[in-house]
Image 1: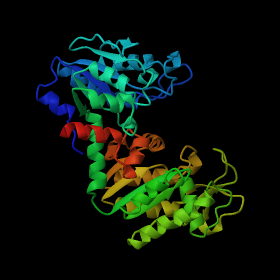
Image 2 (image 1 turned 180 degrees about the vertical axis):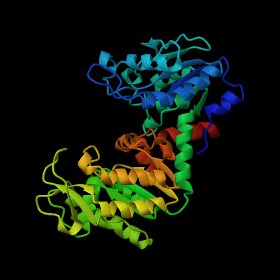
Image 3 (image 1 turned 120 degrees about the vertical axis):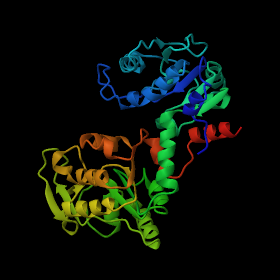
Image 4 (image 1 turned 90 degrees about the vertical axis):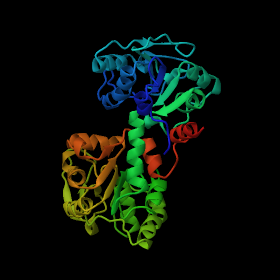
Length: 397
């Protein structure tokens, strides 16, 4: 997509002395004591902040955290732990400012963190008055939060409408480039892995991909529904019998293009959903009425791995089994390493997918790891994200 890039503005010397407002995605998980348990999103925000500081800008950064009630800031909603972690990563103080909408004091070469933007009344509904106040704080608005790119809120969309300059930060730009490379002009064959508990949450994505990919691998509860649609028994496994016609439609759409939805030939079952439940490998035709399918079998995993290693482009969203339980992780582990070993351009996204990538230590062997969950899925579905739309509009104005 066409958008002004913050990196270009910095290279052209257009940022020095300017007030730069960065919308980052610093929505990180915390334990009950408020300690950050995983800081990937914070670390991913650092290049944009450093870019602005190195260019001599007066830098303001904000993000949402959790699901606060607008107008009320509680200790649990505060970005205080994030400010502390940012300061550690940047090696400099990062003051946290509250009640910032009506004015921010920050000098060129300094950075401040603006308290949880979703506490501001009107944020989620993209209130125009709030958006204009945010825009008035800065000379340059930088959207660098792909994880929020599918939401039209005051700090992600409205401010981009009214700021003097609106541009894409390095993280958002990298997401745009990777998605374009993977979906717009992919190297063939193109293989997509879509896994999750329910077909209903990803049906539109499956239908969209069925018109694009050469192999559509389904996993988890989604695979169980497709097995049912193929006439196989799945015991008491998670599935959505009322969506069999939709699953069949996806299979037929692929078949009409000479493509396929591989159906598991063997599975790993248990009688209960538990980490210590005995695991049994069975042919897909031999699933008992009291079985739970918790992973694909080794034969299926090997066949899928061979397809992935021969792919030109791979899109991965979701583990293919209950990989959190050691007895049922083999399918996801084999898939993960096959993607890592493939010469294909691979793009992966979604929380569980990122957890699997981290578990198997293959971060550096994936072509691009998306920081977005819902945004990544909506792009796969073929939707134009609000952030992309407004940045493209501002770039052409």
